[in-house]
Length: 134
Picture 1: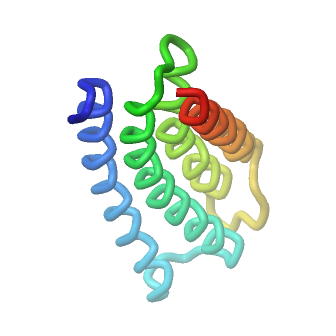
Picture 2: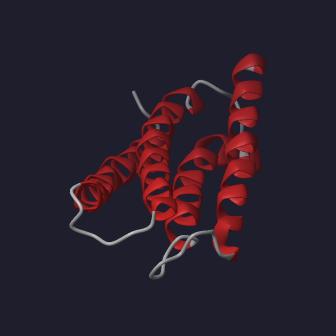
């Protein structure tokens, strides 16, 4: 049985995967030459798409593991939500930092990638410790 927290967040994450599918259509436009992008923008579109899908699926797995811990409060939130929030921040950083015609390097929104990576590490560390100490 899933906790209510895990059930609700898992439902949201599954619905979010539909948006990754939409991003895949844009990526197909790029690969087929139907969208004008620089090689840098193509690489960042691929990275954003890959991170979004992978981290959302990992976020689903984390819900199962979070229910197996005895964590409460901030630690429970971090274990349960760190990966899903990183799944927003990291792809967002790839996409938003490469937007604009002819862009060949990231803008300042690349900071979202690093913020997401930090939250990903914190969430996974919290969940790992929570499982080892349960």
